[in-house]
Image 1 (tube, rainbow, N blue to C red):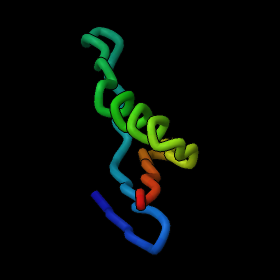
Image 2 (tube, one colour; image 1 turned 30 degrees about the vertical axis):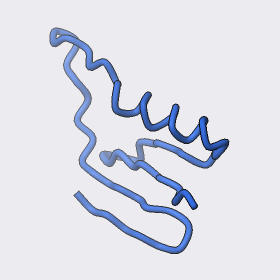
Image 3 (cartoon, one colour; image 1 turned 90 degrees about the vertical axis):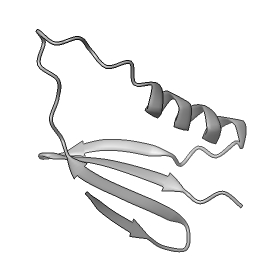
Image 4 (cartoon, helix red, strand yellow; image 1 turned 120 degrees about the vertical axis):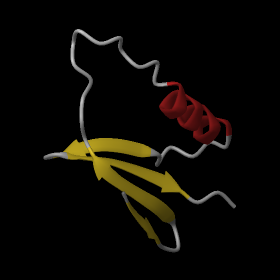
Length: 63
């Protein structure tokens, strides 16, 4: 896991390992919770993306 902090956001990068189809899908409660928090504060720059074999989460700093 890599964590990068700057003046506007925190970026968390981790290995991306999708769940196999035969396993139960995750509920994505963590990502949904984060999206809801940022929506509550009317911040729309929360992002997640997959780049090659990395999962990247960009978390804007709240003030």
